[in-house]
Image 1 (cartoon, rainbow, N blue to C red):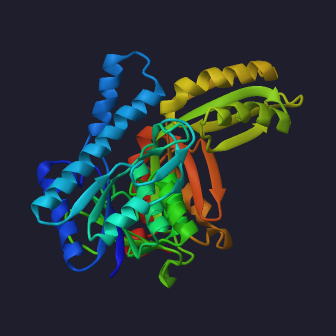
Image 2: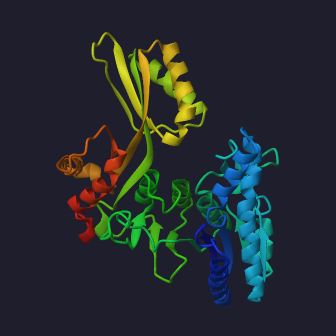
Image 3: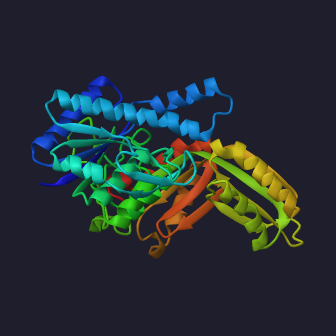
Amino acid sequence: MALVVQKYGGTSVGTVERIKAVAQRIARVHAAGDRVVAVVSAMGHTTDELLKLASAVSGRPSLREIDQLLATGEEQSMALVAMALHDLDVPAISLSGPQAGIRTTGPYGKSRISGIHPSRALRALEDGKVVIVAGFQGLNRLDDVTTLGRGGSDTTAVALAAALKADRCEIYTDVDGVYTADPRLVPEARQLERISYAEMAELAWRGAKVMHPRAIELGKLYGVDILVASSFNDNPGTLITEVAPVENVNTISGIAYDLDVAKVTVARAPAGTETLAGLFGPLGEAEISVDVIVVESAGNGGGRTDVSFTVAEKELHSVEPIVRRAAERLGAGGVTLAGGFAKVSIVGTGMLNRPGYAARMFKALAAAGIEVQMVTTSEIQVTCVIPRENVDEAVRRLHRAFGLEQGGV
């Protein structure tokens, strides 16, 4: 008798009909003799609608109360799925994150799972029940409900699979699996049968929306294989696992893009690591992630440098006062902030050992007349910051340049 942890995203439980379909899918697995824990997201656009309500009620709603509010979205889904299972004569119980023993740490809205004590879920499974758990939430040391940030239900599912020593973790969404590129932009994109944790995490960090990167990192850490598949059909999906198949070694696995990019430049700052610490330290304390960083000598030299970096454009309002204060303390020449950028990335194992990938990427972008503003690389990715309006063309050009519709190079 296998123990299966499943996760159903917002589109999978977006309507009454979809909730009933999810219940039928769970019931089939239960009838086959497997024990099931299902993690659910809020229905459809519920989270966005709750945030709009908060803004309508208060000009400055507290982060604690926002988490109290947002947690109700997943709790609504868990109860409805349990009710649908009851109608199918399947014994089921719904548990909120705290009831499932999920403990969190960190700030409201961006907390992380610090531990799971799944005794109640285990007792329910021993009693033959299906357990439905609200994703995206847990309980902090103050006994307050906190949320895990966007995509947190993925993390909930993988963390539960690790804590319960589940045989399988299945992430159900509205796509058939992981593709070489966004099929909405590239119709000839191929679905991958398998992909390594490292490649999938990189694709996710670089903008692919199939799964949350923190969930993939947890899967790698605890050896939890993750199947990504559609809840709308029975197609086989994509397995995220430790070892990619031989044909994927030393090839590009996919193209990812991120549209939420802004560029910040601090001009004529004093050269040296103290400047970098004085600039990025306050951003880190404010829980603001910085990605591509470029440091170059200022135009007139004199021991001065220009420091440029990217942040999420939606965080510019928080970034600006922090950076301006830091620049003033450092005696920098000025600060410029600009939105309207995007990142496009090629991701694949073994690129470091096979030169020429970056050159091929730049050649493809140059042929399309796409200006590259910044570049960052690692052993499995090359990322370029480009104007946002060029993303669609960039993804299509890169997909063709690396032959991904035919299996890659």
